[in-house]
Length: 150
Image 1 (cartoon, helix red, strand yellow):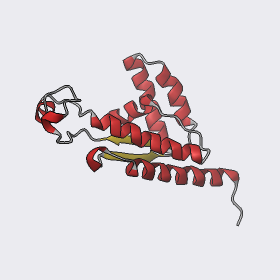
Image 2: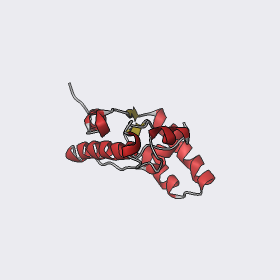
Image 3: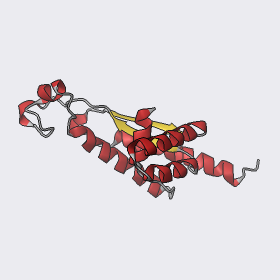
Image 4: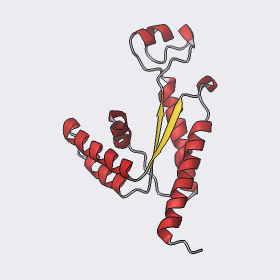
């Protein structure tokens, strides 16, 4: 059987995306609480994401969303990595969120400081997988913001 370059590249990109999701999932997390979520977009979902990025560009006044939307259209896949917001239950001994404790943070609809930390570690683990596979990758606030809008 013969495989053309487009098919082989598609397989490599999807295999790398799967390993990126695994790396994000297994990256170290605060107290071992796994609140990381991943998803992979391909095909029509890439266009939906790009269109949303273009819409947000106008709404938010972020011109770089337009550039990033074009990059999304040229991608074989997009790996989305997010984190659920949930206090880690460290109580009065923490206060990194700016509130007295987790209960006060929850009541004020605050963001637990450990979520963004865990997300950063997960994103770093995932991008290192792409780099090791020599698959070009970018971390895009714009794509994440558009995904949240969807």
